[in-house]
Amino acid sequence: MFNVKKDISKSYTLPASFYRSPAVFEEVKEKVLASSWLWVGDSSDLAEQGQQHPFTLLEGVLDEPLLFTKDKKENIHCLSNVCTHRGKIIVEEARKGRMLQCGYHGRCFGLDGSFKRQVAFEGAENFPSLEDNLSKIPFVEWLNMLFVSCNPQVPFEEMVAPIMERVAYLPLNEMEYDPNTSVDYFVDANWALYCDNYLEGLHVPFVHPELNEALDFGDYDYEIFPYCNLQLGIADENENRCFTPPKGHPDHGKRIYAWYFWLFPNLMLNFYPFGLSLNVVIPLRHNKTKVSFRTYKFKGTELSPSDYCIDATEMQDEAVVESVQKGIQSRFYRQGRFSPTHEKAVHHFHSLIQEYMAK
Ligand code: FES
Ligand SMILES: [Fe+2]
Image (cartoon, rainbow, N blue to C red; front, side):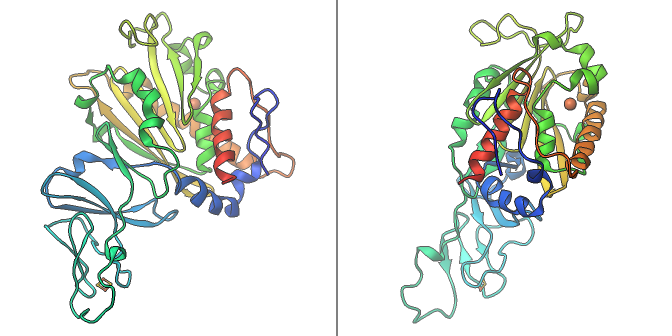
């Protein structure tokens, strides 16, 4: 099915069937999505001791019932929210308390998921055992955000190291979530088409006239890392809103309009002078995607996403992506080729998809 070659100049893009087939989407669920680190929320939502915060990992797609807890030592735990007795969901709604108790037959667990007690099990052999504890789910807290993975293939810290190299000098811990400029979009297209479009600047002059004014397209650059990549937006000489990184920084001497980072498989971290615009690409079905735009602002900034035509740009992107979703249904389109200069990051994404799908 796949014909993504290491050498971009010889390579083909992912085949149309990858984006249009419900059967392939089923495979993607386990091989890509369940095997990756997924953004699930902000750690500020877990501020208090005793908090029990149930959630479903990728509802409608992975449907994994999970639970965050915060114990009295302020440690966060990510647990399976499924009772080890007969499988009821343990915490149905967010609540606070020192213990987790299943509402079916009363089995109790500590906030770290360890089995505590169960009535009427006298005489049960080899009980309780380790299997009666709730499964612990790998998670990480990074930049005050929470990521989980059912089956991680790569340590998260390793994946994000190239991002930190660029942005660690910024006041990241002082960024605050801004609900007023955060918004969800729904796109009638496969999630990977949305990512493909994000990953290249080749379309910018054709699709985004306003953005094209602010960026110096001649200096637009791409850097590929093992599990993330960067598009370096250089500010046009008439554009004053930009980062001027300090000495020793890899971009010292450049005027950075934005660092556009993509983290495999479905997260975009766009650092602008106002802060971070996080785009979480959430697959809903093989041809339906939700994209959550979340704004985290630097303290005291007077800039906002509206100064960057982010909404207009998004509408333009959605229109082309939805058009591609229609196009790839064609009997006459199978796959394409890559621009070796401007589609390196798309090629990177397709290579990783091919690698994960082969596992
Ligand atoms: S299913 Fe939870 S106690 Fe029985
Ligand atoms: Fe775009």
